[in-house]
Image 1: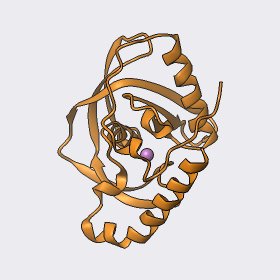
Image 2: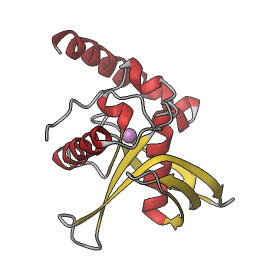
Image 3: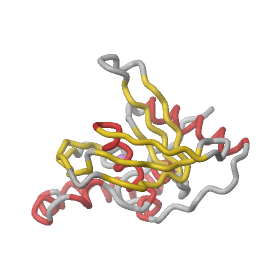
Image 4: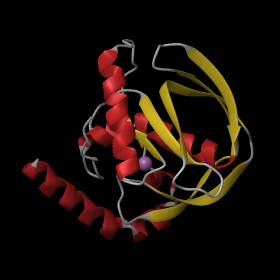
Length: 178
Ligand code: CO
């Protein structure tokens, strides 16, 4: 097991459309273990593979169980796809490990139907709502090169321009070191 470096705003891998996963082998399983470990270490509730530099369609989610944040239910989803969503949307504040120090209110669908594969390649379909539905939309966005700041109004984005630019410079400096 190993911790992976979380890529931050400005890293080109975060803007790529990730590739579908077709091989369900041991190395995918090991990669998943490292991703889960990295997510928990960074105290995130979700992490998408591009955020650790792998442009592949896989996400992990660690939802806090009611009340107890320490106790998390871990979900691994490969090639996740939203097959249906509600008309209704709601707004909630979001953050992202790839956008440290930033949090903004983002509008998302309240209910989803989702298809994904597990580590054995078996397909599942689930219906979900609430925070879990929100986290899934956020993480699946990462697989398409989208980050939560892309959902903000042009005005809000322009207010963040300075912060984003600084973040981009820090990312470039960190990439030189790595
Ligand atoms: Co994120």
